[in-house]
Each structure stands twice: as C-alpha cells, then as structure tokens.
Amino acid sequence: MAELERLEARLGDLAGAVAWPPAPDLAAGVRAGIAARARRRRLRLVLLAAALALALAGGGALAATPALRGAVIQWVPGQPEPSPSSATGGGPGADLGLGQRYPSVADAERAAGFQAVVPAALGQPDEVWYRSSIGVIALVYRPRPGLPPSSDRRVGALVMEARASPNNPVFVKLAGAGTTVTQTTVNGGPGFWITGAPHGFAFPIGAEGQTDSFRLAGNVLLWNQAGLVVRIESGLDQREALRIAGTAR
Amino acid sequence: MEEPRAEAADEELVERARRGHARAYDELVRRYTQMAFRTAYVVTGSAAEAEDAAQDAFVKAHRALPRFRAGAPFRPWLLRIVGNEARNRRRSAGRRAALELRAAAIADAGATGGASPHDAAEAAEDRRTLLRALDALPDDQRQVVTCRYLLQLSVEETAAALDVPPGTVKSRLSRALERLRELMEPTRHG
Image 1 (cartoon, rainbow over the protein chains, first blue to last red):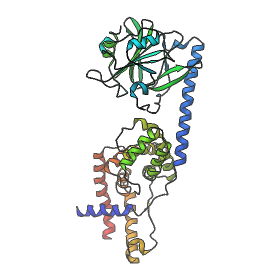
Image 2: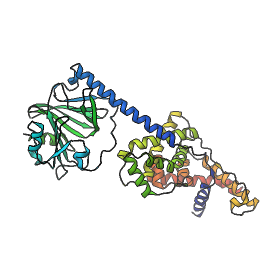
Image 3: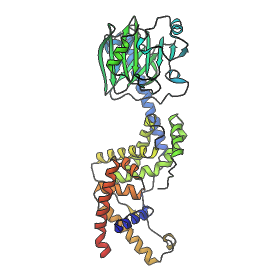
Image 4: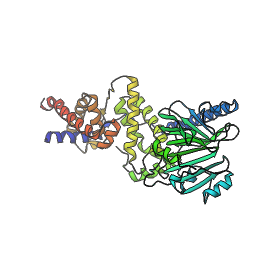
C-alpha cells in the first residue's frame, strides 16, 4: 500500500516535469470557426426560405402538408439547429417574438379582426399576444399541475392561431432527423402531431419568404379549425394534447 | 495545470458568452486552451491533431452554449467535448495514440531545489523510467493515469474527457497503478 502511495507521489511530482508540446494559440482559429459556422447557418436559412418562396410561387407550397392550410412542414436533412437563447427578459411572450401584449382574448381578437379558438380545458391564458405583421394571436399558459413545462421552461402551453390561407402559410416547420410527423384529425379538421427531436419553427415574412424567430419547438399539435390554422406547443403527449384541442371553441 | 479553477468566473463568462459577448468566449478559450490541447494530445498522441481537435471543440462548445446547464461547471463540460473530438480524430486516423512524453531537461541545480548534480541526474533518470513505464501501459490505463496525475484533472473531469463513468476511472487507475508498480520493479531492484 505504501508503495502505491509512493508511486502516486512520484506521478504527482512528474506532472510539473513533463515536456508537453507547446500549446498553440487557438483564439483566432476559434473565432474564424464560429464566424464560418454562423455564415453557414444564415445560408441554410436563406436556402430554406428560398425553397419556401419557390414553392409558393409555383403553387406547390402545400405539397409537404397536403391537408393543412396556413402551415408548411419542410423536411430538412439532419437536425435543425437552434438559434441562440432568446431569453432577454420581459416574459416568455416578449422573448418568443409574439408581438404586442393585450389584456384579454377579446382585445386581441378586435386587433386581429378574427375570433380566436380557445381551448376551454386550459382555462384563461396567462398572457395574450397579437403579432400584427403576420396576423397571429398567441395564448401563453404557464406550467402548473397537469401542464408540465414545454421546451421553454416558463411556458406550459403556447397556443398560436391565424387565418388559414391556402397560399400563404403563417407557420413554417423544419422537421429533420428524429422528428416524427403524424397525420391526425382535430375537431373534424385535418391536423398533424409533431414530436420527437425538437423541430425548427419560424414565421415567414416578406414577399421573398424570409423567416424570422427561428427557434426549436417541442411537441406540437397543428390543425385547421373554423377557418384558422391553430397550433398548440407543449410538453404534453399526443393523447392529452388532442384532449385539450378537443375543447377548443 | 496552470489554469485557475475559477468556477464562479467561468460561470459569469459562460453567461456573457451565451448572450453573445465574443470577448467573454475569447477569455474562456484563452483560459482553457492549454488544458484542452493537452487533453486532446493525450487521446490523439499527435500535437497537430490535438491542435485541430481542441480548436474544433471550442467551436462546437460555442455552438452548444445555449444547451449548457446554467450553474454547471464549465471544465468537465468542455473536456467532454474535447475528448469526443479527439477520439473522433484518432478513430479517423486509425492508429494507436503513441504518446511520447518526455521529462523536461533540467539545466541547473537551482531547478532541482539545490540538489547535487548526482541527485539531479538520478531524479531525471527516475522520471524518464516512470514515463517509459507509463508509455508501456495499455491505452485506456495510460490515458487515465495521464489525465489524473499529469494533467491533474479530477476524477469527474477525467471521466468526462475519456467518456467513461467515474467508477471506471477509479478501477482503471487502480489497475494502472498496480501495473506501473510491476513495471518499475526490475528497475528498483536492478
């Protein structure tokens, strides 16, 4: 035992006496690598947006989601990458680019010019938002018993809805490796359940199909109801998400 | 290792880097370049590959910062990325990492704490013998001893760098020390 302890002591002494190869200066190379990666990511988003714009121009935008109006699920190779954390304070709605906050659903409906569907099972939303540039009403529900945190730990459920135009999607999904998209029916309307690996989510804006607010989303139920395209993002499983969506009126 | 174990400062730098402050990340790179490079060198056995692995690891770590758990120690998290990158490069090269560590030349008696030239020469020979024995160990044992004693990583950091559970680090260390002792036997009695 004492011999082993002596050996350990000798190894400890050796630490200061080893002639390691000189450590290189990595700072410049790391900075260049980070910048190159950022350029590649921007290019990828531009290409995806261009593909979307092209599809829109050709009237084939909904080929990927044949039964749904107002949303596009675009398959991408590999796994979409997250944008840097958007936690800048001001509450989840502000950080998620949901637009302007309203005191009630009725106020947001007046601003939007359409009547929102609200899942009765979730009760009153904690925050109501409307983003006028894309016409999306968003209802934020904080986590609570029975409503676990979603991919954003501050949010239990995020309901977003907009008029469902067949030629003008407001929601763009970038589904990659590990994401599962299942066709389903919600309240008699067509829908999709998107789960597995987090998928990319963006709002398309502008005539050229640019996207913004690109981020990763967790489990999402997406469907058409009452002329709207509605999505519920949450940490719930499909069965529970469908139950809640079933109470949307 | 010379780098300070300043976890609190690391935490602050990581948080700033997550918010997009390039200089904060530069500081983390500067602080951990030596540790990352040497760890990669232990795995790859090549200074050139270690440099590439360490650089790519820092770029990948930057990309992964949004997923870094706030309040967690940065060093083991970085070491895991460095170790993975180094192993990938080593696998691509398809060869054993022939680590050739040398004992630094000791030029004068001052560096030996005032020992006589004879004692200094004996100490230097002792280090060379120990390094030769270390190099004769199987890869997995040599890596764990080098990380733990020569890089002075903690058990958890060694486990992260080598992608094995802490218990495996301890058992490999135990076997490696026993084997080293055996390898040193003929020298000690010779």
